[in-house]
Length: 156
Image (cartoon, rainbow, N blue to C red; front, side):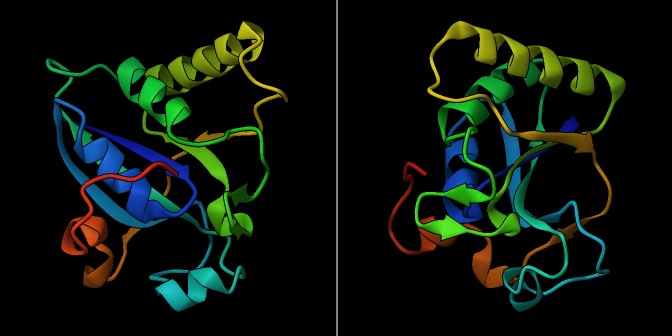
């Protein structure tokens, strides 16, 4: 089992999308990339902790590659908007890949560069690519939120 951590706006939809990928064993909603220890949702929403709403993806690399997870990540959000996804804005909604190894870092950079060169996007990718640090699991009511609400999937 391996771990990948992504931020792509509101974590509810991101979690649902990754849960639908064959080979993903779990997707955990939480907070990454900040400085405050054990932040709450309210803390993160204040914008003062430096955290992004993020998803920690546990996956079986024999069934799904990190490159495939990167493809999903690029498809489900707009990586050209700094600190914003749809109606949500603030640093907690930034686009980010928090890598867990040198191989993930290299794959993320290569994938971003290919996407920029593809001409598919109207602006350059602004996604942060940074080393993974502490990941704080969000409160239980956030876990599987869309499933609890009767929606298995949504586009970000």
